[in-house]
Length: 138
Image 1 (cartoon, rainbow, N blue to C red):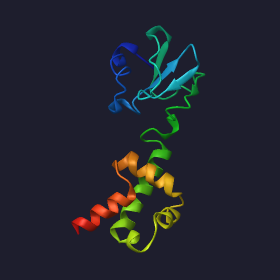
Image 2 (cartoon, rainbow, N blue to C red):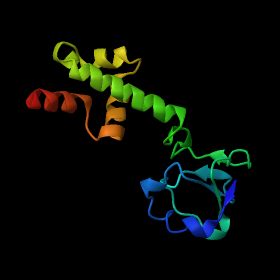
Image 3 (cartoon, rainbow, N blue to C red):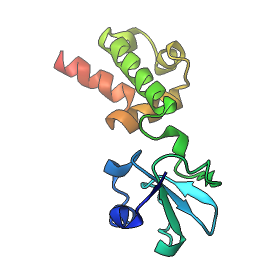
Image 4 (tube, rainbow, N blue to C red):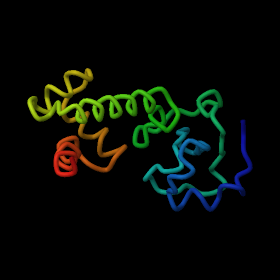
């Protein structure tokens, strides 16, 4: 569904995360579509089409920088928030007191680096920092 470009003209240049998942930016000159938070240079207004969701069906290919498949509400995002929630449950059960970060990640079918990145994305802190804070508070 093609959207009115004037409605979202102010949202694109500021990379506002509130608009992430609300629309996709299709760039006619490159044939690529991006999320509104993509760090690439903002294209000219005449080269842009905005879509609610079906940019790929319109012939655009996904941007490799902003990773549209992991935007809020997608299965990848929901799955990652589930992993963080499950990790928090294990941390609350003192899992990291007796086990390593690698063992925690293994419980969640992840690697330590991926789990740390998910924690940074969702909570702004690493799993070890969260566990240390929990120990201090309880």
